[in-house]
View 1 (cartoon, rainbow, N blue to C red):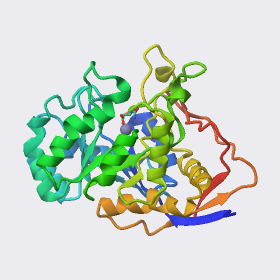
View 2: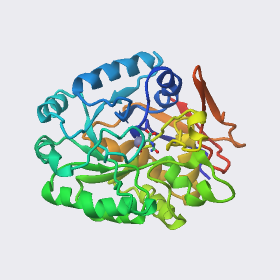
View 3: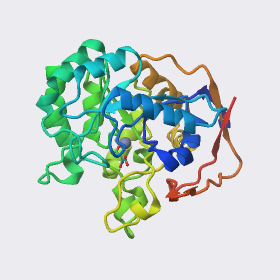
Length: 348
Ligand code: NCD
Ligand code: ZN
């Protein structure tokens, strides 16, 4: 049995760091383990220009512990009036690494997002030309569409027409939750990839709804049936270069989650890599973990692998993770996978 494993330092290709006191409280959990992260722009108000992304990056760097060599990779939030020259200049000067598309109203702080995707076609054309990745929250918002069907309807009705029109556009279908999304990405060309979260590899919809409502498992896209979780796990542990880790770690105060209208998001930054090691070990595919966490995403984003490595150690007993993070404004619950985790992470 493998008890120690050394891998290239991981990257997180989809992360919410928020701002202010939450940013300060949550960033060390990411920066101690991860080399880089694609930072989501859905602040309130959102980061919609390169100038705002630069200022946000400065706040992130200031909040990051000095002894962590973490590099935030910035994104901007597409609106129907995004300036394509701002995108082109920001990307060519390495000030942003991707652009994020939120359908209006799909998730947390997405009210400034897109209603009419055709309005973005000039921006997509430019992005295709310069190789700038488009990160997509892939859910339709039509109230007529059942919430469990919103991802695959989006692929069919919105994403596929965009990809057919811009066949070389680099697209990351974010936080996929369905067999249909796995299949779509698997048969697509290599410019189409997907991130998979830690929590969607662990939970199905029973975690949220069976035996009492569990708001800390509620996220968007919402977890689906068990067969979809298994499809995601197979994709993540296959080593296929089109699938990589985007934790979508999304901290919210407990008071906002444990509410009559609770916020969507699971906070997985503190225990993501130990949980993934446990899962991949159970799958008999520990040797594929590094591809998922540290190689495939960097290759997709045309970035070098991190030069540092981390060591994963299987302890004799399960690790006691703290289940809360405390901030001056409130508590944030850490994701509970519901099974014992015996892997710990050491920087080397
Ligand atoms: C994210 C958040 O809280 O910002 N929530 C979530 O459920 N994943 C937004 C998102 O990525 O959809
Ligand atoms: Zn997210």
